[in-house]
Image 1 (tube, rainbow, N blue to C red):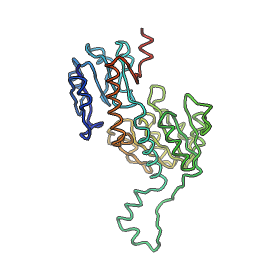
Image 2: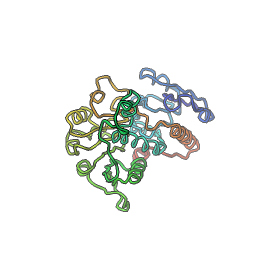
Image 3: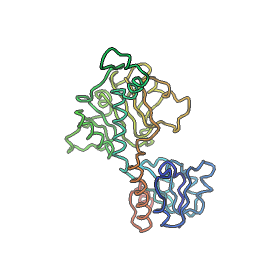
Image 4: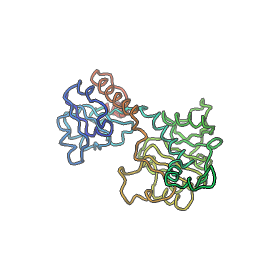
Length: 324
């Protein structure tokens, strides 16, 4: 059994062992695979694992030996799952491994927007506080979260974690999801316009699909309160970045905290890199040691289940069933 990991570095830059995968057969791990080498490195491979390296329909069709595709992440939009289904190739992901870490990072972004901790620390180290006449000094308004309304888009494992933490801060929670649960009395399920209009903070936690790509646009942003914040630890493609940049520059909304952008790494001319009140971290919400360890364990378990004929976490199962 030949196994290839096309881009293993970000998941495992050297602090874990690939040995559990190597026990299943011949295993080759590449740190990164540029587009022109994807086909070459995938030839003759039965088990192909990818994080962000794109597997197109044409590539999948051309790989005669391919039997299984594993995504080293939760999001699987880098794989043409329909093309895989046509060849009866299961595509698996690892759901839920980073829920705690992503929820934690969501609040790291929110708390920085609310309290400007980093900016105040920098000011202290540069001597500003030492020159103050008062024991307490701040250079921007400080926001208390208790009593504010958090609007969550997407209510999977991460969205639920974020809601739980928000309630601990004393916030109220409203949710927009395609599948509301009327038995959940801890949140209010509302439509998307209501969510953007009434929330003090909007936090995105939905996967990126063809249907919701760029759905956060000028129209929705214009509904938000001028004091509101937008958070995104999901996928950068959910937001029309030019529209968000204009909203921040004009004061339409008060700030944004982003861990993801539409193109990663970003192009130098990305409009969000130069606007005010926009905190951007380099797609690290998922990357705590604990979360990456769970991810690797999930990848190994998915491969093991496939080899045992007991598939789990198959994202294109319905498509394969329909094609039978």
